[in-house]
Image (cartoon, rainbow, N blue to C red; front, top):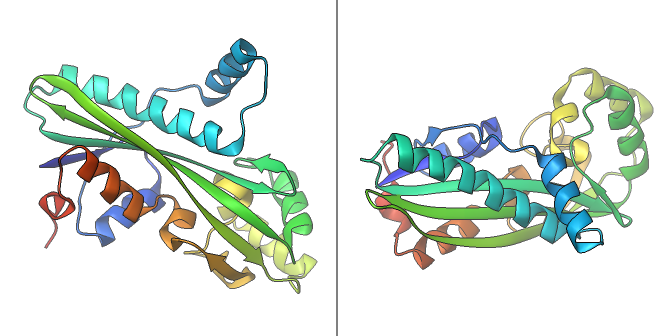
Length: 215
C-alpha cells in the first residue's frame, strides 16, 4: 500500500517517517489565497478556521490525487493533504512570511493561549482512479510562556524558522522552549494529527499498519 503526501512540509514528512511511513511527496498546485477568496465571495461570508483548513486540505489532496491517478496507473494507496491555521483572540493566522509580522505576533502571543486548527484530507487512489475520500479537522490548544523576552523573540525571528509556519511557531524545533503547554494531539501542532489520518484511512478501508514501509 503506497502513500503520497500532498505537501513538501518537512514537519509533515518527519511525522510520517517517525510513524514508519516513507511517502512519495508532491507539491499541490493550489493558490490558497485565491481559493479562500473565491469561496468567501461566493458565500458572502468569512470562513471560520475549521472551514478554512478543511477546504484547503481537500483542494491540495484532490489536486495531487488527480495527478497521481493520471500519471501513475500503478499507484495503489492513499494521498494525504493537510493545512494548518492558528487562531488566537479571534484572529486567524497563517504563515507570517516577514520578520516584522512574526515579531508582532510573538509580542502579542506570549502569555496567551491559542488554538491550532489542522485540516486533513485522505483520498484513496488505485488503478481505477480516485475511488473515495475522507476529511476531518483536528485542533490543539497552545499556551506560550509569559516570560519570553524581546531579545528571545528577535533571536527566534532572526533564525528564519517562524516565518514559514502557521502561527509563526513550532513545538518540535527552536520554538519549543517558548511553549508552556499543549492540550490535544501534539502531532496536530507539528503539522498533522497522525491519529486523525489513521482514522480517515480506516474509513477508506486502509489499515495504518499496511502503510508501514520503513525498517
